[in-house]
Image 1 (cartoon, rainbow, N blue to C red):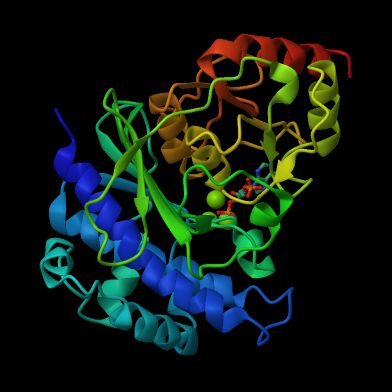
Image 2: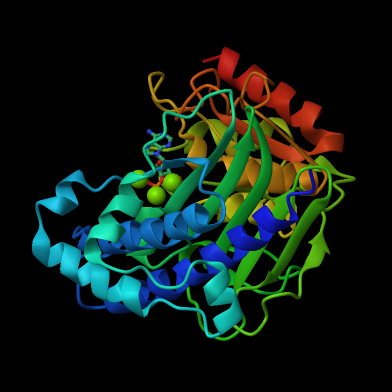
Length: 352
Ligand SMILES: Nc1ncnc2c1ncn2[C@@H]1O[C@H](COP(=O)(O)O)[C@@H](OP(=O)(O)O)[C@H]1O
Ligand SMILES: [Mg+2]
Ligand SMILES: [Mg+2]
Ligand SMILES: [Mg+2]
């Protein structure tokens, strides 16, 4: 199977969803206090509805594991109306592409049903889409990085992965800096759409409308000297241990500060060689990583010449349900240096 239709629809669907998320992102500025989660809630539900509508129109027999569900929304008619207004308005300028996605949704009830169609339990059999409508919600609220993430998992293996990062530079060669991680902007020169299909490589293209079919291949960068590598990690210390990451960097002789950014933008950034390594080190022993937080990024990095495992060296297992219950942490690196990084990870974690 070539998955050409799947990757095409997935790219258009996340692209359309970012019309909505970008509108919400701008609306949040200066109007909401930092601890008010409502803007991101609107973005989460709206983007999930739009993407599921497109999947159901094209692949009606597939299952969907989506992060959100609509039960609380059903009890809040004001919020439902607010989201419905945004969902109605989010349409691609390209009318043929809009039709391919099934056109606009028809009613608030259809929207709620679409959101609730993301309740699959996941598992090892069949075709299952993993959807994170806004990944990096904290970054979204902070005005940093976030991503709209969609992947197709078939019989437990990721076959298609798509990541829309509205606030990353379009330019694949733009070096990573703390500024890129912290100061999200979707202005001029920003917005990139990463995609990968199993065994055919990874690509990027501008997220802006009018650039629907101009993908270029991306590759991870060679790391001839590990001491010069750039690490990416979560902004949130509760999601990945900053202290362990620093100890691992030190063990490898890396002196450069890590680049902190929210969301799967980290996977996209290392896949195109803007950074080199992504570490996610468990903070709580009982936390199970969610498949929608990793499926797209895992494939994009592997197809760009990388290797992705957990902190013990096991590949991420997407066939275990809604979570990666058999994995702890993530180590993503170019194939050539992955073992060296993993050895440092194991040594630091075992000495704790
Ligand atoms: N204790 C924890 N450890 C690891 N990841 C966690 C976590 N609590 C929440 N998360 C996940 O971390 C994701 C963000 O990752 P990052 O820190 O790389 O930006 C969140 O996705 P959402 O923002 O979609 O909810 C959430 O699913
Ligand atoms: Mg997420
Ligand atoms: Mg999310
Ligand atoms: Mg969440």
